[in-house]
Image 1: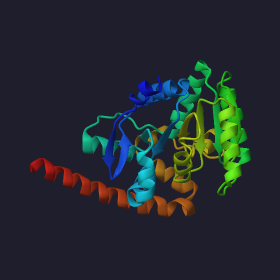
Image 2 (image 1 turned 90 degrees about the vertical axis):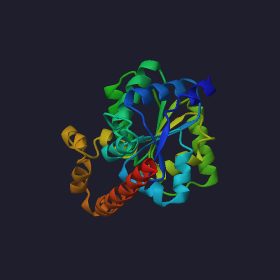
Image 3 (image 1 turned 60 degrees about the vertical axis):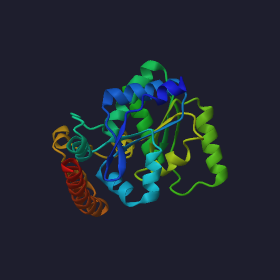
Length: 262
């Protein structure tokens, strides 16, 4: 069963030096649920422009992302880049917060245990309560916040044991990019479940932060909505990384056109 599931992972395409999976909500959901039922270890991430640029600039982080089973296009610009470079014809992105909700709904129906790890205690407890209220059949088998520092070896072993002993099929990781991807990479062979990095989804679904209106998400303006909420933290991320993204995407497009001519 494990080999069969591993063959189902969507193919990746090189975008700015990072392998991005050309996948949809429905395809990814089916694959994740199959893997969770098989109790196979897997790593899933959702990358927006910030994470993509970071993966392209930091070789160590980029190599970690290469080991992920799926790196979904979290942001509309990443989806558009896939379509532009490889004509993947994706009609929508695969947004982490939205995907988390779809997974929880399916997990409730399929009786798959879910574990929540990350963020602050108040946030993760509110998240748990809100998810159970929305999906009464959802079995949240574990829920704990981050300690916001590197775990000791003993703490790490204890965390892995708690997760594995909980019989969770799916573990949502909400530590923010790139910490959540680094954590997931180092635990791929330790945690016997599907780990899914969902970033700000914890804050959104806990009611701690507001999500951009759907029309702004469709128009690739989510960054502007979030910038207004957290200007000091996000100014550099959006304006610097967005500029780098556009520049490198332009260069990659030029290279592809040259190769086609040759």
